[in-house]
Length: 531
Image (cartoon, rainbow, N blue to C red; front, side, top):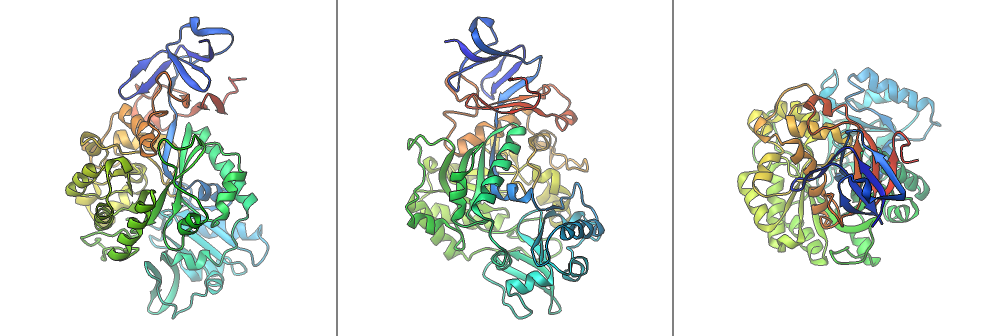
Protein backbone atom coordinates (compact mmCIF):
# COMPACT_ATOMS: atom_id res chain seq x y z
CA UNK A 1 0.00 0.00 0.00
CA UNK A 2 1.25 3.45 -0.87
CA UNK A 3 1.40 5.92 1.98
CA UNK A 4 -0.81 8.97 2.03
CA UNK A 5 1.65 10.59 4.45
CA UNK A 6 5.26 9.51 4.92
CA UNK A 7 7.30 10.85 7.84
CA UNK A 8 11.00 10.36 7.27
CA UNK A 9 14.45 11.44 8.51
CA UNK A 10 13.56 11.59 12.20
CA UNK A 11 13.06 9.51 15.29
CA UNK A 12 9.77 7.70 15.90
CA UNK A 13 8.97 6.61 19.46
CA UNK A 14 6.75 3.61 18.79
CA UNK A 15 5.89 3.03 22.45
CA UNK A 16 7.56 1.76 25.59
CA UNK A 17 7.93 -1.79 24.27
CA UNK A 18 8.36 -0.94 20.60
CA UNK A 19 11.57 1.04 20.55
CA UNK A 20 12.57 3.51 17.86
CA UNK A 21 12.04 3.75 14.09
CA UNK A 22 13.29 6.37 11.64
CA UNK A 23 9.94 7.06 10.01
CA UNK A 24 6.32 6.04 9.71
CA UNK A 25 3.84 5.66 6.86
CA UNK A 26 0.15 6.56 7.20
CA UNK A 27 -2.81 5.60 5.01
CA UNK A 28 -6.54 5.31 5.63
CA UNK A 29 -6.14 6.92 9.04
CA UNK A 30 -3.85 4.11 10.23
CA UNK A 31 -0.17 3.41 10.63
CA UNK A 32 0.62 1.10 7.71
CA UNK A 33 4.39 0.72 8.01
CA UNK A 34 7.36 1.76 10.09
CA UNK A 35 10.46 3.26 8.58
CA UNK A 36 11.00 6.24 6.32
CA UNK A 37 11.87 4.43 3.10
CA UNK A 38 10.90 6.42 0.01
CA UNK A 39 9.73 3.14 -1.53
CA UNK A 40 6.54 3.62 0.51
CA UNK A 41 5.82 6.88 -1.29
CA UNK A 42 3.74 7.28 -4.42
CA UNK A 43 3.06 10.26 -6.65
CA UNK A 44 0.36 11.59 -4.30
CA UNK A 45 2.17 10.89 -1.02
CA UNK A 46 2.79 13.86 1.26
CA UNK A 47 6.39 13.43 2.45
CA UNK A 48 7.24 15.17 5.70
CA UNK A 49 10.94 15.58 6.48
CA UNK A 50 11.21 15.44 10.25
CA UNK A 51 14.71 16.87 10.14
CA UNK A 52 15.71 14.95 13.25
CA UNK A 53 12.58 15.83 15.20
CA UNK A 54 10.80 13.36 17.47
CA UNK A 55 7.47 11.80 16.44
CA UNK A 56 5.43 10.18 19.21
CA UNK A 57 1.96 8.70 19.80
CA UNK A 58 -0.31 11.68 20.41
CA UNK A 59 -0.86 12.56 24.05
CA UNK A 60 -4.00 11.36 25.85
CA UNK A 61 -5.37 13.74 28.50
CA UNK A 62 -6.93 11.16 30.84
CA UNK A 63 -8.38 13.55 33.42
CA UNK A 64 -9.37 17.13 32.71
CA UNK A 65 -12.51 19.26 32.53
CA UNK A 66 -12.65 20.16 28.86
CA UNK A 67 -15.81 22.26 28.81
CA UNK A 68 -14.92 24.18 32.01
CA UNK A 69 -11.44 24.76 30.55
CA UNK A 70 -13.01 26.19 27.42
CA UNK A 71 -15.43 28.34 29.40
CA UNK A 72 -12.54 29.49 31.59
CA UNK A 73 -10.82 30.99 28.57
CA UNK A 74 -13.44 33.77 28.88
CA UNK A 75 -12.91 34.30 32.63
CA UNK A 76 -10.41 36.37 34.61
CA UNK A 77 -7.15 34.43 34.73
CA UNK A 78 -5.70 34.33 38.25
CA UNK A 79 -3.27 31.42 38.07
CA UNK A 80 -0.17 31.56 40.26
CA UNK A 81 2.28 31.77 37.35
CA UNK A 82 0.75 35.19 36.60
CA UNK A 83 -0.83 36.41 39.83
CA UNK A 84 1.14 36.47 43.08
CA UNK A 85 -0.45 39.34 45.02
CA UNK A 86 -3.86 40.35 46.31
CA UNK A 87 -3.49 43.70 44.53
CA UNK A 88 -3.10 41.92 41.20
CA UNK A 89 -6.18 39.76 41.90
CA UNK A 90 -8.24 42.86 42.64
CA UNK A 91 -6.83 44.83 39.70
CA UNK A 92 -7.77 42.09 37.23
CA UNK A 93 -11.27 41.85 38.70
CA UNK A 94 -11.75 45.64 38.50
CA UNK A 95 -10.64 45.62 34.86
CA UNK A 96 -13.08 42.82 34.05
CA UNK A 97 -15.90 44.63 35.87
CA UNK A 98 -15.25 47.76 33.81
CA UNK A 99 -15.95 45.70 30.67
CA UNK A 100 -19.07 44.05 32.13
CA UNK A 101 -22.54 45.61 32.42
CA UNK A 102 -23.56 46.32 36.02
CA UNK A 103 -25.31 43.42 37.70
CA UNK A 104 -23.72 40.75 35.52
CA UNK A 105 -21.32 38.21 37.02
CA UNK A 106 -17.55 38.64 37.08
CA UNK A 107 -15.86 35.25 37.32
CA UNK A 108 -12.22 34.50 38.02
CA UNK A 109 -10.39 31.21 37.93
CA UNK A 110 -7.18 29.64 39.18
CA UNK A 111 -5.98 31.67 42.18
CA UNK A 112 -3.82 29.87 44.74
CA UNK A 113 -3.99 31.45 48.19
CA UNK A 114 -0.72 29.78 49.23
CA UNK A 115 1.06 31.59 46.40
CA UNK A 116 -0.39 35.04 47.16
CA UNK A 117 1.57 37.60 49.16
CA UNK A 118 -1.16 37.54 51.84
CA UNK A 119 -0.86 33.73 52.24
CA UNK A 120 -4.64 33.43 52.66
CA UNK A 121 -7.82 33.54 50.61
CA UNK A 122 -9.12 36.95 49.56
CA UNK A 123 -11.92 38.16 51.81
CA UNK A 124 -15.49 39.14 50.92
CA UNK A 125 -14.83 42.72 52.07
CA UNK A 126 -11.84 43.02 49.72
CA UNK A 127 -13.88 41.79 46.77
CA UNK A 128 -16.73 44.17 47.72
CA UNK A 129 -14.40 47.16 47.76
CA UNK A 130 -12.87 46.27 44.39
CA UNK A 131 -16.10 45.33 42.58
CA UNK A 132 -19.16 46.79 44.32
CA UNK A 133 -21.64 46.68 41.41
CA UNK A 134 -21.33 43.09 40.19
CA UNK A 135 -21.64 39.64 41.76
CA UNK A 136 -18.13 38.15 41.88
CA UNK A 137 -16.97 34.58 42.35
CA UNK A 138 -13.34 33.50 42.05
CA UNK A 139 -12.44 29.82 42.09
CA UNK A 140 -9.30 28.41 43.68
CA UNK A 141 -7.00 26.48 41.36
CA UNK A 142 -8.17 23.13 42.80
CA UNK A 143 -11.76 23.86 41.80
CA UNK A 144 -12.99 22.76 45.23
CA UNK A 145 -13.55 26.18 46.75
CA UNK A 146 -13.90 29.81 45.89
CA UNK A 147 -14.60 33.27 47.29
CA UNK A 148 -17.79 35.25 46.65
CA UNK A 149 -18.49 38.91 47.24
CA UNK A 150 -21.61 40.09 49.08
CA UNK A 151 -23.67 40.50 45.89
CA UNK A 152 -22.94 36.90 44.92
CA UNK A 153 -23.73 35.63 48.41
CA UNK A 154 -27.09 37.43 48.33
CA UNK A 155 -28.00 35.95 44.96
CA UNK A 156 -27.02 32.50 46.27
CA UNK A 157 -29.23 32.94 49.33
CA UNK A 158 -26.26 32.53 51.67
CA UNK A 159 -26.58 34.40 54.97
CA UNK A 160 -25.04 34.19 58.41
CA UNK A 161 -27.44 31.46 59.48
CA UNK A 162 -27.37 29.36 56.29
CA UNK A 163 -26.49 25.80 57.34
CA UNK A 164 -23.61 23.95 55.70
CA UNK A 165 -24.94 21.51 53.10
CA UNK A 166 -23.88 17.86 53.22
CA UNK A 167 -20.25 17.62 52.15
CA UNK A 168 -19.81 21.40 52.00
CA UNK A 169 -18.62 24.28 54.16
CA UNK A 170 -19.66 27.95 54.29
CA UNK A 171 -16.66 29.44 56.06
CA UNK A 172 -17.25 31.88 58.91
CA UNK A 173 -14.93 33.68 61.31
CA UNK A 174 -16.59 34.56 64.62
CA UNK A 175 -19.95 34.27 62.90
CA UNK A 176 -18.96 36.56 60.01
CA UNK A 177 -19.13 35.25 56.44
CA UNK A 178 -15.66 35.40 54.87
CA UNK A 179 -16.96 34.71 51.37
CA UNK A 180 -15.06 31.39 51.20
CA UNK A 181 -17.29 28.54 50.03
CA UNK A 182 -15.95 24.97 49.99
CA UNK A 183 -16.86 21.70 48.27
CA UNK A 184 -20.58 20.99 47.75
CA UNK A 185 -21.54 24.37 49.21
CA UNK A 186 -20.21 25.85 45.96
CA UNK A 187 -23.39 24.55 44.34
CA UNK A 188 -25.36 27.27 46.11
CA UNK A 189 -23.35 29.92 44.28
CA UNK A 190 -23.21 28.13 40.95
CA UNK A 191 -26.97 27.64 40.90
CA UNK A 192 -27.37 31.40 41.23
CA UNK A 193 -25.31 32.04 38.10
CA UNK A 194 -26.93 32.06 34.67
CA UNK A 195 -26.13 28.78 32.92
CA UNK A 196 -24.11 29.07 29.71
CA UNK A 197 -26.28 28.48 26.66
CA UNK A 198 -25.76 25.67 24.17
CA UNK A 199 -24.02 27.82 21.57
CA UNK A 200 -21.55 29.24 24.10
CA UNK A 201 -20.76 25.74 25.39
CA UNK A 202 -20.27 24.39 21.88
CA UNK A 203 -17.81 27.20 21.13
CA UNK A 204 -15.96 26.45 24.39
CA UNK A 205 -15.73 22.74 23.52
CA UNK A 206 -14.25 23.56 20.13
CA UNK A 207 -11.79 26.11 21.52
CA UNK A 208 -10.61 23.76 24.26
CA UNK A 209 -10.19 20.86 21.86
CA UNK A 210 -8.20 22.95 19.42
CA UNK A 211 -5.98 24.24 22.22
CA UNK A 212 -5.24 20.64 23.22
CA UNK A 213 -4.44 19.77 19.62
CA UNK A 214 -1.86 22.58 19.56
CA UNK A 215 -0.12 20.82 22.45
CA UNK A 216 -0.05 17.36 20.85
CA UNK A 217 -3.25 15.80 22.21
CA UNK A 218 -5.66 13.76 20.10
CA UNK A 219 -7.69 12.22 22.94
CA UNK A 220 -9.13 13.71 26.10
CA UNK A 221 -11.59 13.19 28.93
CA UNK A 222 -14.29 15.57 30.12
CA UNK A 223 -14.45 14.62 33.76
CA UNK A 224 -17.82 15.57 35.32
CA UNK A 225 -20.04 16.26 32.33
CA UNK A 226 -23.17 18.14 33.34
CA UNK A 227 -21.78 20.31 36.12
CA UNK A 228 -21.45 23.45 33.99
CA UNK A 229 -24.71 23.35 32.04
CA UNK A 230 -26.71 20.29 33.05
CA UNK A 231 -28.19 18.08 30.35
CA UNK A 232 -27.67 20.91 27.84
CA UNK A 233 -23.99 19.91 27.80
CA UNK A 234 -24.91 16.74 25.92
CA UNK A 235 -26.60 18.83 23.23
CA UNK A 236 -23.62 21.19 23.13
CA UNK A 237 -21.27 18.29 22.44
CA UNK A 238 -23.53 17.06 19.65
CA UNK A 239 -23.54 20.56 18.18
CA UNK A 240 -19.80 21.20 18.49
CA UNK A 241 -17.09 20.32 16.02
CA UNK A 242 -15.35 17.97 18.42
CA UNK A 243 -11.56 18.00 17.91
CA UNK A 244 -10.48 15.40 20.46
CA UNK A 245 -11.54 11.77 20.81
CA UNK A 246 -13.56 12.19 24.00
CA UNK A 247 -14.10 9.88 26.98
CA UNK A 248 -17.20 11.34 28.60
CA UNK A 249 -17.63 11.00 32.36
CA UNK A 250 -21.05 11.96 33.71
CA UNK A 251 -21.43 13.92 36.94
CA UNK A 252 -22.65 11.29 39.40
CA UNK A 253 -23.13 13.26 42.60
CA UNK A 254 -26.84 13.68 43.37
CA UNK A 255 -26.75 17.21 41.96
CA UNK A 256 -25.21 15.86 38.73
CA UNK A 257 -26.90 14.51 35.60
CA UNK A 258 -26.10 10.78 35.74
CA UNK A 259 -29.57 9.78 36.99
CA UNK A 260 -31.37 12.02 34.51
CA UNK A 261 -29.17 10.86 31.65
CA UNK A 262 -29.96 7.24 32.52
CA UNK A 263 -33.68 7.96 32.58
CA UNK A 264 -33.37 9.65 29.18
CA UNK A 265 -31.97 6.42 27.73
CA UNK A 266 -28.23 7.14 27.72
CA UNK A 267 -26.27 3.93 28.28
CA UNK A 268 -22.56 3.34 28.83
CA UNK A 269 -20.32 2.66 25.86
CA UNK A 270 -18.78 -0.76 26.38
CA UNK A 271 -15.72 -2.35 24.73
CA UNK A 272 -16.84 -4.01 21.54
CA UNK A 273 -19.83 -1.69 21.33
CA UNK A 274 -20.67 0.78 18.59
CA UNK A 275 -17.94 2.34 16.49
CA UNK A 276 -18.42 5.89 17.82
CA UNK A 277 -14.93 7.32 18.02
CA UNK A 278 -15.39 10.94 19.05
CA UNK A 279 -17.88 10.82 21.95
CA UNK A 280 -17.91 7.76 24.16
CA UNK A 281 -20.05 8.06 27.29
CA UNK A 282 -18.40 5.40 29.38
CA UNK A 283 -18.09 6.45 33.00
CA UNK A 284 -19.60 8.22 36.00
CA UNK A 285 -17.76 10.41 38.48
CA UNK A 286 -18.47 10.78 42.20
CA UNK A 287 -16.49 12.96 44.62
CA UNK A 288 -15.20 11.44 47.83
CA UNK A 289 -13.20 14.41 49.15
CA UNK A 290 -11.63 17.72 48.20
CA UNK A 291 -8.07 18.95 47.63
CA UNK A 292 -4.93 18.61 49.71
CA UNK A 293 -3.82 22.18 49.04
CA UNK A 294 -7.22 23.43 50.19
CA UNK A 295 -7.12 21.21 53.33
CA UNK A 296 -10.29 19.38 52.27
CA UNK A 297 -8.82 16.08 51.00
CA UNK A 298 -9.74 13.44 53.61
CA UNK A 299 -6.83 11.92 55.56
CA UNK A 300 -6.53 9.52 58.47
CA UNK A 301 -3.91 11.74 60.13
CA UNK A 302 -4.47 15.49 60.52
CA UNK A 303 -2.97 18.27 58.45
CA UNK A 304 -0.21 20.23 60.16
CA UNK A 305 -2.55 23.25 60.51
CA UNK A 306 -5.23 20.93 61.93
CA UNK A 307 -8.25 19.04 60.68
CA UNK A 308 -8.49 15.89 58.58
CA UNK A 309 -10.40 17.18 55.57
CA UNK A 310 -13.94 16.77 54.27
CA UNK A 311 -15.74 13.61 53.18
CA UNK A 312 -18.25 14.41 50.45
CA UNK A 313 -20.58 11.61 51.60
CA UNK A 314 -20.86 9.22 54.53
CA UNK A 315 -19.78 5.63 53.87
CA UNK A 316 -23.28 4.26 53.35
CA UNK A 317 -24.15 6.84 50.71
CA UNK A 318 -20.87 6.26 48.86
CA UNK A 319 -21.53 2.51 48.82
CA UNK A 320 -25.05 3.12 47.50
CA UNK A 321 -23.89 5.43 44.70
CA UNK A 322 -21.06 3.20 43.50
CA UNK A 323 -23.14 0.04 43.70
CA UNK A 324 -25.87 1.67 41.59
CA UNK A 325 -23.52 2.93 38.87
CA UNK A 326 -21.50 -0.29 38.83
CA UNK A 327 -24.73 -2.22 38.38
CA UNK A 328 -25.73 0.01 35.45
CA UNK A 329 -22.51 -0.90 33.68
CA UNK A 330 -20.59 2.35 34.02
CA UNK A 331 -16.87 2.56 34.65
CA UNK A 332 -16.45 4.21 38.06
CA UNK A 333 -14.10 7.24 37.88
CA UNK A 334 -14.11 8.34 41.52
CA UNK A 335 -12.33 11.40 42.90
CA UNK A 336 -10.28 10.53 46.01
CA UNK A 337 -7.04 12.27 47.01
CA UNK A 338 -6.42 11.62 50.73
CA UNK A 339 -5.78 8.12 52.09
CA UNK A 340 -9.01 8.09 54.11
CA UNK A 341 -11.05 9.00 51.02
CA UNK A 342 -9.22 6.38 48.95
CA UNK A 343 -10.10 3.81 51.61
CA UNK A 344 -13.77 4.76 51.49
CA UNK A 345 -13.86 4.52 47.70
CA UNK A 346 -11.83 1.32 47.48
CA UNK A 347 -14.02 -0.41 50.04
CA UNK A 348 -17.16 0.69 48.16
CA UNK A 349 -15.75 -0.56 44.84
CA UNK A 350 -14.83 -3.90 46.39
CA UNK A 351 -18.33 -4.25 47.82
CA UNK A 352 -19.86 -3.33 44.45
CA UNK A 353 -17.95 -6.18 42.80
CA UNK A 354 -15.07 -4.46 41.00
CA UNK A 355 -13.19 -6.82 38.64
CA UNK A 356 -10.20 -6.19 36.35
CA UNK A 357 -12.29 -6.16 33.17
CA UNK A 358 -14.32 -3.21 34.47
CA UNK A 359 -11.21 -1.02 34.87
CA UNK A 360 -12.70 1.19 37.57
CA UNK A 361 -10.51 4.18 38.37
CA UNK A 362 -9.49 6.21 41.40
CA UNK A 363 -9.01 9.73 40.12
CA UNK A 364 -5.99 11.55 41.59
CA UNK A 365 -5.14 8.80 44.12
CA UNK A 366 -2.45 11.10 45.43
CA UNK A 367 -1.77 9.79 48.93
CA UNK A 368 -2.28 6.05 48.64
CA UNK A 369 -1.04 3.42 51.09
CA UNK A 370 0.82 0.23 50.21
CA UNK A 371 -2.17 -1.94 51.20
CA UNK A 372 -4.50 0.18 49.08
CA UNK A 373 -2.19 -0.21 46.08
CA UNK A 374 -2.21 -3.98 46.58
CA UNK A 375 -5.99 -4.12 46.71
CA UNK A 376 -6.33 -1.88 43.65
CA UNK A 377 -4.01 -4.12 41.66
CA UNK A 378 -5.96 -7.23 42.67
CA UNK A 379 -9.22 -5.72 41.39
CA UNK A 380 -7.76 -4.01 38.34
CA UNK A 381 -8.65 -0.58 39.76
CA UNK A 382 -6.53 2.03 38.00
CA UNK A 383 -4.84 5.11 39.46
CA UNK A 384 -5.36 8.23 37.35
CA UNK A 385 -2.85 10.69 38.83
CA UNK A 386 -1.69 14.20 38.00
CA UNK A 387 2.12 14.26 38.37
CA UNK A 388 2.02 17.99 37.58
CA UNK A 389 0.48 18.51 41.02
CA UNK A 390 3.96 17.84 42.44
CA UNK A 391 5.34 20.62 40.25
CA UNK A 392 2.62 23.16 41.02
CA UNK A 393 1.55 22.21 44.56
CA UNK A 394 4.47 20.22 45.99
CA UNK A 395 5.66 23.11 48.14
CA UNK A 396 2.16 23.48 49.57
CA UNK A 397 2.01 19.74 50.34
CA UNK A 398 5.19 20.11 52.40
CA UNK A 399 3.67 22.98 54.37
CA UNK A 400 0.33 21.35 55.13
CA UNK A 401 1.24 17.64 55.30
CA UNK A 402 4.93 17.49 56.14
CA UNK A 403 7.68 15.63 54.25
CA UNK A 404 6.71 12.05 55.16
CA UNK A 405 3.45 12.29 53.24
CA UNK A 406 4.38 14.97 50.71
CA UNK A 407 7.48 13.26 49.31
CA UNK A 408 5.61 9.98 48.74
CA UNK A 409 2.68 11.54 46.90
CA UNK A 410 1.75 10.48 43.36
CA UNK A 411 4.16 7.50 43.27
CA UNK A 412 4.53 7.04 39.51
CA UNK A 413 7.59 4.75 39.56
CA UNK A 414 6.11 2.54 42.27
CA UNK A 415 2.89 2.11 40.31
CA UNK A 416 4.77 1.11 37.18
CA UNK A 417 7.03 -1.30 39.01
CA UNK A 418 3.98 -2.92 40.61
CA UNK A 419 2.36 -3.46 37.21
CA UNK A 420 -0.21 -0.71 37.39
CA UNK A 421 -0.90 1.66 34.48
CA UNK A 422 -0.91 5.21 35.87
CA UNK A 423 -2.30 7.52 33.19
CA UNK A 424 -0.67 10.92 33.52
CA UNK A 425 -3.04 13.87 33.29
CA UNK A 426 -3.41 17.50 34.37
CA UNK A 427 -6.91 17.95 35.86
CA UNK A 428 -6.95 21.18 33.86
CA UNK A 429 -8.04 23.87 34.53
CA UNK A 430 -6.80 22.93 38.02
CA UNK A 431 -3.26 22.67 36.64
CA UNK A 432 -1.61 23.74 33.42
CA UNK A 433 -2.66 21.45 30.57
CA UNK A 434 0.68 21.91 28.75
CA UNK A 435 2.09 18.35 28.67
CA UNK A 436 5.73 19.37 28.84
CA UNK A 437 5.52 20.54 32.45
CA UNK A 438 3.97 17.19 33.32
CA UNK A 439 6.70 15.27 31.46
CA UNK A 440 9.38 17.36 33.16
CA UNK A 441 8.13 16.64 36.67
CA UNK A 442 7.76 12.93 35.93
CA UNK A 443 11.45 12.68 35.06
CA UNK A 444 12.75 15.13 37.69
CA UNK A 445 10.17 15.21 40.56
CA UNK A 446 10.98 18.91 40.85
CA UNK A 447 8.59 21.56 42.07
CA UNK A 448 8.38 24.80 40.12
CA UNK A 449 10.83 26.20 42.69
CA UNK A 450 13.36 23.42 41.94
CA UNK A 451 12.90 21.29 45.07
CA UNK A 452 13.16 17.53 44.40
CA UNK A 453 10.20 15.62 45.88
CA UNK A 454 11.01 11.93 46.27
CA UNK A 455 13.64 11.21 43.59
CA UNK A 456 12.98 7.45 43.82
CA UNK A 457 9.68 8.08 42.01
CA UNK A 458 11.32 9.54 38.89
CA UNK A 459 10.47 7.96 35.55
CA UNK A 460 12.56 7.72 32.41
CA UNK A 461 11.34 9.96 29.61
CA UNK A 462 10.18 6.85 27.75
CA UNK A 463 8.10 5.79 30.76
CA UNK A 464 6.69 9.29 31.08
CA UNK A 465 5.59 9.30 27.43
CA UNK A 466 4.05 5.85 27.96
CA UNK A 467 2.08 7.17 30.95
CA UNK A 468 0.84 10.09 28.84
CA UNK A 469 -0.25 8.00 25.85
CA UNK A 470 -0.73 4.24 26.19
CA UNK A 471 -1.80 4.32 29.86
CA UNK A 472 -4.45 6.91 29.07
CA UNK A 473 -5.70 4.79 26.18
CA UNK A 474 -5.81 1.73 28.47
CA UNK A 475 -7.88 3.61 31.04
CA UNK A 476 -10.58 4.14 28.37
CA UNK A 477 -10.40 0.66 26.78
CA UNK A 478 -8.65 2.06 23.69
CA UNK A 479 -5.18 0.52 23.93
CA UNK A 480 -5.96 -1.75 20.97
CA UNK A 481 -6.23 1.21 18.61
CA UNK A 482 -4.05 4.00 20.00
CA UNK A 483 -1.28 4.80 22.44
CA UNK A 484 1.47 3.16 20.35
CA UNK A 485 2.60 3.51 16.75
CA UNK A 486 2.52 0.04 15.24
CA UNK A 487 1.00 -1.10 11.92
CA UNK A 488 -2.78 -1.17 12.22
CA UNK A 489 -2.98 1.40 15.01
CA UNK A 490 -4.77 4.72 14.57
CA UNK A 491 -2.50 7.41 13.18
CA UNK A 492 -2.82 9.62 16.26
CA UNK A 493 0.53 11.36 16.05
CA UNK A 494 2.38 14.32 17.53
CA UNK A 495 5.58 15.75 16.07
CA UNK A 496 7.66 17.64 18.63
CA UNK A 497 10.11 20.39 17.75
CA UNK A 498 13.02 18.58 19.41
CA UNK A 499 14.13 15.14 20.52
CA UNK A 500 13.22 15.10 24.20
CA UNK A 501 14.41 11.49 24.50
CA UNK A 502 18.00 12.74 24.62
CA UNK A 503 17.50 16.36 25.69
CA UNK A 504 18.50 17.70 29.07
CA UNK A 505 15.41 17.54 31.33
CA UNK A 506 15.33 21.33 31.60
CA UNK A 507 14.88 21.52 27.82
CA UNK A 508 11.65 19.52 28.03
CA UNK A 509 9.92 22.60 29.44
CA UNK A 510 10.76 24.53 26.26
CA UNK A 511 9.50 21.85 23.86
CA UNK A 512 6.59 22.57 21.54
CA UNK A 513 4.34 20.54 19.27
CA UNK A 514 4.75 21.21 15.54
CA UNK A 515 2.12 18.81 14.16
CA UNK A 516 -0.80 16.81 15.53
CA UNK A 517 -2.75 14.21 13.61
CA UNK A 518 -5.89 12.39 14.68
CA UNK A 519 -6.61 9.34 12.58
CA UNK A 520 -4.29 10.71 9.90
CA UNK A 521 -6.14 14.04 9.75
CA UNK A 522 -4.19 17.18 10.60
CA UNK A 523 -5.67 18.97 13.61
CA UNK A 524 -2.66 21.20 14.34
CA UNK A 525 0.06 22.46 12.02
CA UNK A 526 2.28 25.00 13.70
CA UNK A 527 4.39 25.86 10.63
CA UNK A 528 1.95 25.01 7.82
CA UNK A 529 4.17 22.18 6.62
CA UNK A 530 1.24 19.94 5.63
CA UNK A 531 0.10 22.49 3.08
